[in-house]
Image (tube, rainbow, N blue to C red; front, side):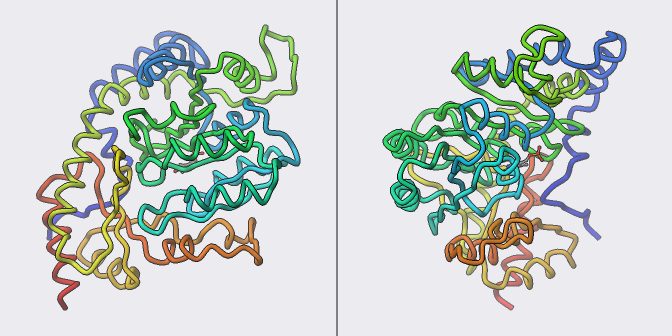
Length: 369
Ligand SMILES: *Cc1c(COP(=O)(O)O)cnc(C)c1O
């Protein structure tokens, strides 16, 4: 029996760097700083440098990174925020936490990313009520940022990028996260940069936005014990920041492994009757997921699971069909079709070339049976 393979494997991310992570944790334990200390500051600086320049604010998780980024760029109660529905409900939960109103935008059939023409239609229809646009760089594939930023700008809307799956992705020669007014990152353990617990961050090049988010994440303080604005606790802790500094050092090398595995999938699966991921011109994806499509998704998923290959489905139910966010009048046929067909194959850095060959062998056998 060959080993079990999983499309999400949190332990693999620890084992790959166990010695470095243990050393980092020991350093924090001995330091006596456990919340918002030198490790968080160093990580914020290093992650900002990773974007060329700019400012990073470490926060508690990706959902709050989105919420605080939206608040930071000026979104308030009653504002409309345009985003996609083929995302984790966290994207929409962040919008609703503010009392803002999510407006769903259809996706492109080939890339499964926000459609620029659909966005343009929503912005025109809402006539200035959309305060921000939240493109999601789903599966590590960067959305069409040049056109999205242009369209949003023309309608007076800010752009907050959901970078939870896109650490290091590039589009049109520029890193995802650096196009909008702010970008929100998650460091959930299985993301391309993963903590050993929860973590998140906001990136921005706007000092005023950064200052506001910094205050929001801790009680509205600029100065200790002076709450200038209503704030909250959304802090990143020192242990997670120390782990994230280790993970960040390895990000480019690990993204290169993901790229190499994805290239092999694309090559070996070309003959299979599956829809393979489409990469837009000028896009440099980081393959958070390698997502194929077939109307027989459940049959393929079951077959692979029987062979010890456990594939995720990101996401089986679009947000506008979720009980908490149901919009009976909202019709997004491409989004709904994508959610019914997607299957995420194992592509994380612990997946070997031989593993990819084995997965492809099983898929090709299934496809010809
Ligand atoms: C993971 C994820 C989030 C939420 O991040 P958490 O850290 O779990 O709060 C938001 N958006 C997308 C696209 C994600 O993949």
